[in-house]
Length: 175
Image 1 (cartoon, rainbow, N blue to C red):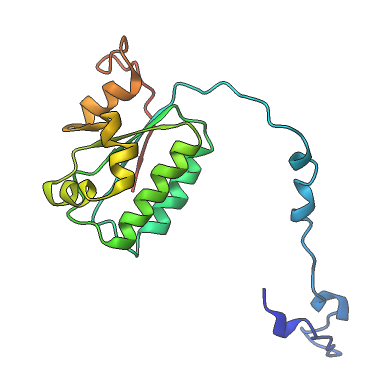
Image 2: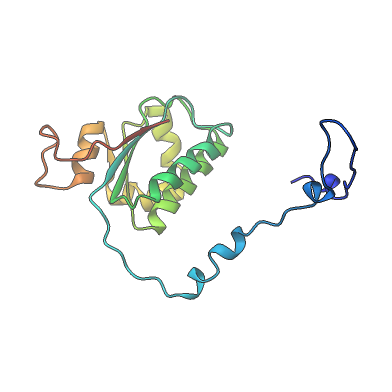
């Protein structure tokens, strides 16, 4: 949106720049009205699928990447997953902004009744996480931290499923 161009009503006669003044008039989006009816209807419970996603962070979790990861988790959330395993073996460190992004991700998933499992946090990252109140409340107290991706996936999928035979959907999203 560029408000400085809202007033442009010029027309150049003859040549490649022939345009009606209406071509430069400000356009109004219809998007806000698209969901007006939806907000007035009560929400109906839906059946949650069996989807379990494995999300691997690649590199540090910092202020540069935090928002991008939050956006990706919103996309994962739109598919209605049962659980998400967050693999952290490739995260050497987390800065305060990255920790805030991770907290927001966990809170967003928790609010939508999606279980969150952490796999393989490095010692330095695990130590930083231990100092976070939200981590103690949402992850550690529920015993959802695992030393390997496989053990976290087994816990997320639930008992009675065999990962070796492909019992879980191949739903991996890398970072």
